[in-house]
Length: 258
Image (tube, rainbow, N blue to C red; front, side, top):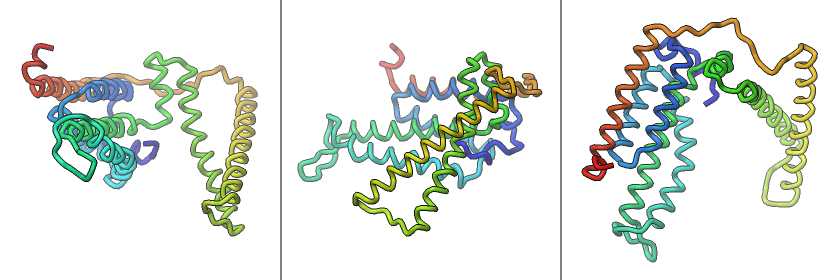
C-alpha cells in the first residue's frame, strides 16, 4: 500500500483533487463494508477493479498486495465452512462444511478485495507529500496528520535498520532455528531495533524543535476543486448508488422492506 509507484501516474484519477479521492474512498469503503449479499459484493469487486484499471496501477504491485491479504483470508476458508451452522454440503470425516459457512467466507473475501482495490486506486495514488495537506484541508486534527506522515516516513527507516541488523547476523553465520540461541538472537535484534528507533526519534524531535516546528506541516500547494474533479466524483458516486440498488434487489422482499 505504501509503494510510491502507485502515486506516480498521469491517469484521470491521479489528476483528481486528493480531497475528492479521499472522501470518495471513505464513502465507497463504508458502502462495501455494509454489503451482505454475494451479488452486491461481486458488483463491488467489479467496480473496484475498474477503478484500479482506470488508475493504471501496475499489475504486479496490485497482485502482490492482494496475495498478501488473501493469504490471511485463506484461514477463514479453513475455519468458517466447518464452524457455521446450516445446510451441510460437504462431509469430511467428522467435519461438515455448510452452505452458509461457504457463502460467508466468499462474502468476506469479495468485500476485503473490493475495499483493498478501492484504497489502492483512490488513496495509494495520492503522493505522501500531498497527504498531510489533504488531511489538513479536510479538517483532520493536526496531530493525527503529523503522526501519519512521520509514521510513514520512519517505518521505511526502521525496516532498513532491521535489514541491516539481520544481514549482520547472517554474516556472522547465524542460522535461525527452533532453539534457545535463535530466540535469544531475535530478542537482541528486536531490542537493538527498539533502542535505535528511540534514539532516532529523540534526535528528530530535537531537530524539529530547533527548526521551530509548531505541530503542523505547511505546503505551498493549494488544492482547487475543478469541474473535472466533480465529474470524477459523479462518475464514481453513480456506480456506488447502483451498488446499493443491487444490494437491495439481491436481498429480495426483506431488503425492500428494510
